[in-house]
Length: 208
Image 1 (cartoon, rainbow, N blue to C red):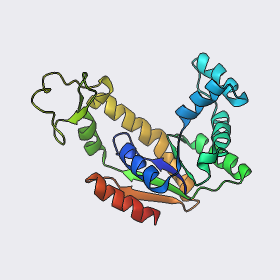
Image 2: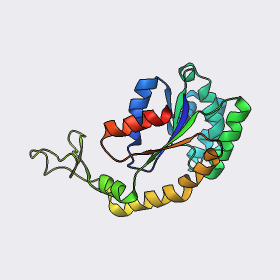
Image 3: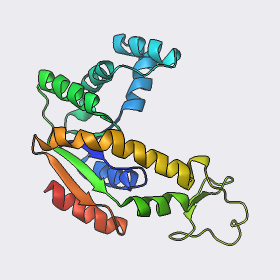
């Protein structure tokens, strides 16, 4: 299975990705992880990317795509992969598609978790973290025990303003990517509302 996972922040991608990776035994590909690994290994592509990163510049889309293909040549991708966090924009989608076509690699599926914005805001703004243990709670869905309730904190990027800014960026930049893959007939949209087990069942049904 060769797939891309899409969804807005707070849609539950992390939970569903972990379950899919365990079930299908495919490699989880994060462009951030790939960039760091390539830089550490001092490969030709890693060295090129490092220059941009040190200058605080975005790594060019084509360079990231080349890194993806380089990563796909590794043994753990033999049974398939899940690409998470890329492409984020229409130019990235076109660059990735052209690079995969040139390498003879075909995507099987683009999976999209859909959750209404208001519910995402409720999910994210209700999150709290225990700074001592690192445990994550939710004021409504998973309240903290009384003994830690006084010390839990809200992350700065979990405020409603920050959440809606991230959602606007997702809808403005990433959602327009989907028509490119819809034209290929590989997009599957899944309702991400409900208990994780129910969402997983819908995801598996969509994969088929």
